[in-house]
Length: 335
Image 1 (cartoon, rainbow, N blue to C red):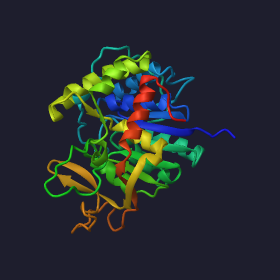
Image 2: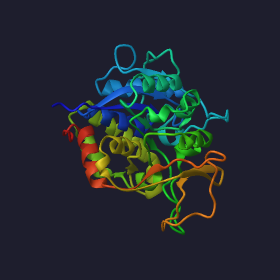
Image 3: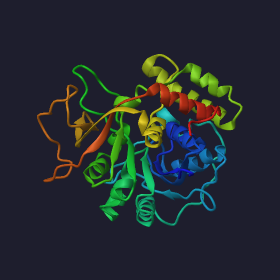
Image 4: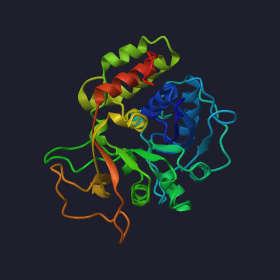
């Protein structure tokens, strides 16, 4: 009997790591990209939309009419605050300012939020939702249909910071949460089938190193060589963090754990709350690093407890990177 491919709806702010996640999904024979919705974050929503088309074209897939449906979403946070763009990480166009062809993409008449509601209602339980940017589109869709996440087979979010870190340990910025904390509150409070966070607590350990990039440069495929170019740009930023030309896989890891949840080796289910982190916000599992309770409970939804979120704590990084790089380089994929 033929196994039905995993159907994934991708909500993305189409920066460099988002692009690599899309290329990996497109290269997996057991995955179908059912639709893509664009949101601001790494770049403007207009650039994010164009980038979807450019990335899918490299993978040999069409975006828009006759291909993978694309819908345009939010241009800024749900509460109307000005949008923050990460041009210092992803370039002004979101794809490292490489100068490639990025034509306009034919888009749906529906907004991204409307498209998410439509897809969930039309085939409840069929699609998995992969959220790779600020959660603005998803929160807006929940406002249209409060039961939205119960109609997806699962929802996997690249965001969150896991439990509170050990004493004296600082964490990388939880950018997707910080860009729209109000939207994140709505999502973490909503009923769901299963909501999984792949946060900075685990993403920072899934490192694509110099040897991996050299392998991609030597790839015989357009996907491999394009991936290497993207990563070179990404590493221009991350070399300032670790003193080496390396970068975390971030969104690629979230995509992979949606498709191959067996690579999650440890997790904890519990309520997630939004907590201030200076001028930014984080989404933490309400547990200390030792597993104990915290002395406060952020109000994710006033007057009501938040439902449990599955928070990833450890992953099989070796297995993930072997598959991720193998698919991007054109060496084949696990099926």
